[in-house]
Length: 302
Figure 1 (cartoon, rainbow, N blue to C red):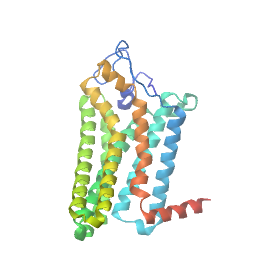
Figure 2: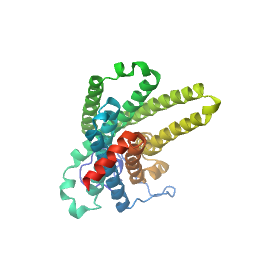
Figure 3: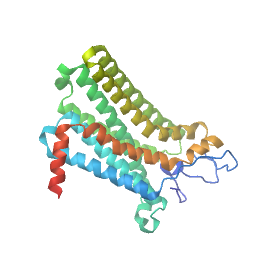
Figure 4: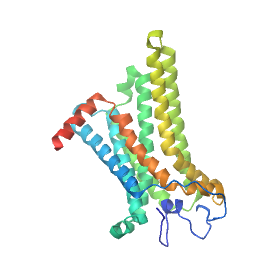
């Protein structure tokens, strides 16, 4: 997914290897250590993108159809699905722009800035909604009796509006100042903050499960602990490599070993799309009510 053209923005600079050596670009030294580069076939990349789009469209359609799902928690899940949908679409557009389908992507290549704003904005909003869902579930567990007075529809809509606005503004600012190290540092710091938030929330839930466990329910507690650990692990596995890439762009942009990491940029984008596929399985399809509505949506579409 090499990026071409005289001007490059944030996402282009992450995967380019120009002869010059500006501070935010990967190294071009070809005499360093031999690198393990995982090639992602274009067909696989497109297929994963289409699966993600289909899954998240179904989630949005099911929540929109069933009035019983019109609650703050499901609104957050719906917005997460929209964000993941935009993440997948924008990454597929990056593939088109890079030349995998160059003969059919003339219009796409003319939308450089719009694509990068979409990528950055969707990434920020997706992470924000993951954090919002974590906070919502934290309140529902530790403040169960006051949940409906704390998480009201009005507050949920204000939070959703703020997140979308933040996504659009951050995407625009990141593209406008893509050549500043501060941009990458802000992205990495934001990821770390979301990771810490989710880790703390999961740790509290695990501690609560162990505190309340009884001999008869010990298996349930261990199962809950394993589930929460897997959720956090999936989040880190899918998003971590991409933000490691960003961190190394700041710490060692010219080091040969860091260059080995840069060569797997396509793999990191693929992992992000995989996260967009897994999110509905974790946060949406586990709901019996949503699964029932999803069946109705699928049957009505035939």
